[in-house]
Image (tube, rainbow, N blue to C red; front, top):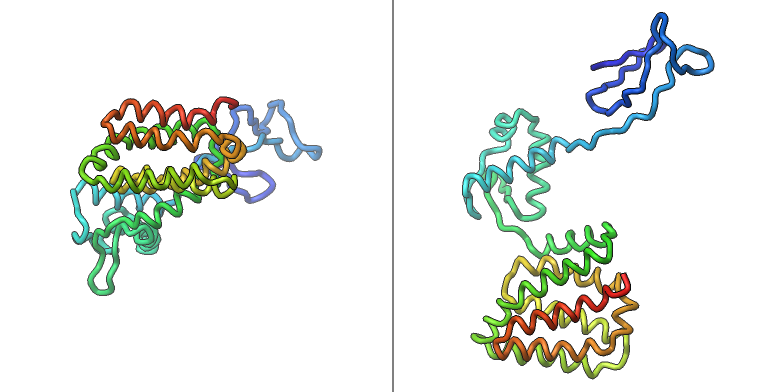
Length: 266
């Protein structure tokens, strides 16, 4: 629907905005609110709808094409021209979408060879996920609960690796020992982050590493609580010993208590 102003050649696309139903346009015999001059109606503010940029829609379509087609790294993709024709968009729009996907390593473009499926650059994804977490200002409780889910959920896999790789327990225990012996609060905080990073990485589940920056954000947001919790350093060794004994449930309870401690004053 297009609304046209009587005294000016303005066009308001009502399909792009939500217009309050109380808007009344002056017509013969109608009563309403008008500006001082009485020429134009006073229209309540319009609330824009959140719309996706066309290149973002194309980006999602290309990802669907890869997933639905069961394509693997190295498999060929349609050309930019073919993608543009398939989705009914310009090649410029397709180029914007492919640049975004190439940045993350999802697709690769080689001159005169076209597009192919790539491999996601987890390091780059981690950097930008951490940036998103830093800017989003999530409630502390959500950060706390996310940490609990991630870290306790990884413990069974860490325990399994400890059985096949004895050196893993020794390496983690050494980090815990150094942490316990650290007196400087700031240095202790840095080593606390390092320990939990190592514990998550010890699961061997590579995609989990992309959430490592969550630890950085958590430790910054809960800094005062972490600096005050001197007792927590000794709890790390108990978690590791439970895993070594094969008691994953005990390790999970200890880690849950260890992290949840910081939420007692929320």
